[in-house]
Image (tube, rainbow, N blue to C red; front, side, top):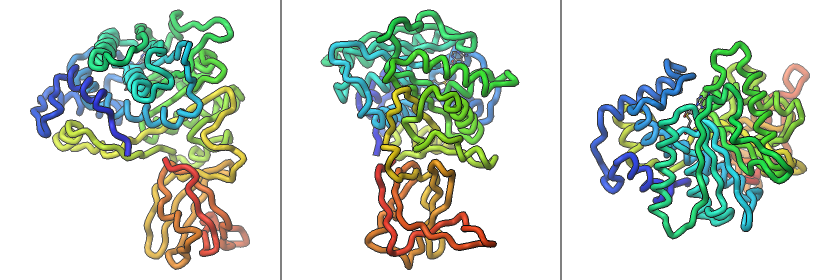
Length: 401
Ligand SMILES: C[S@@+](CC[C@H](N)C(=O)[O-])C[C@H]1O[C@@H](n2cnc3c(N)ncnc32)[C@H](O)[C@@H]1O
């Protein structure tokens, strides 16, 4: 189960002035009201989106305390997926861009990851964080410096910040020239759904923005797009994904196992998202108790794009992705799967449980799985949407989420 490092929690606690050693601590009414206001804004599109709302000290403090730990965890889970393709950068820079980075959530996630994993080494990082809010970028610099001070045994690379309204284009400081220039990793977390919200063609403009970012990557770089696990934000991300792939500029590293149009867009109520387990920090659980939220899992939708065709699992394997939880019905378990042919439901009746398909019991949202012998009953002369594994069938987990 994912857990934030002590280095990260102590850095956030120092800057947010929390005492993390206290199991139960005093949380101010202002902080709680800031968390409520941000949640209202993020989930219902309330007043503030499309403005530099993190200039407000009350919202900034709430964001740092409640949202940075949660969002940093998501980036680190995806860095784990990217581990086999991250550059080693022994003698060269590891150039990372965190766009709409706010307090540098992605930047701190990468720094902490590199300090723990050594490859790429933290000393190789050249981090650039861009945001429209100058105050939140000051907070970003403070977090970076406090982390560096707490962990002076690791030499760490450089951070630069740039104030810019990204709706007006990328700032000149990001310009890449020459063959080996460009970024190895670009993180765009919880930004896309805040861009071009007033436009009649917000999806088209976000697509163009992402297309420009692909042009800023080195040939083997990764572009990480993360959005909230809400239906509207996730579906908008799926649409941008489809538009980008239709232009054949890149392919999906993860989560999708194909470049076909996203099947979640066929029905208006569907969307694809992740739900990963984590150890909830005590202060987050305490805020949840006070405001009535639940952050017991890391929920998000995402797509990682690359230009070199590399993928999380080989496309030759007969793999599918689990895109629902494992539903336990009377006498049967079922999941929804996604592959290049679309979404389909698969079940296994309890009476068909066998040594070859027992792994079905462990299938979970986000897992990559393989299955043999799917049986479909005929319904009105056509095979039913629901398929079933029989006792002779084989169910495997190729990669857990
Ligand atoms: C929800 S926060 C995300 C912060 C960080 N990426 C994270 O996930 O924790 C959205 C950030 O995007 C920034 N932002 C929104 N619209 C922007 C724009 N047009 N140009 C630059 N930054 C923008 C906001 O100031 C805010 O810091």
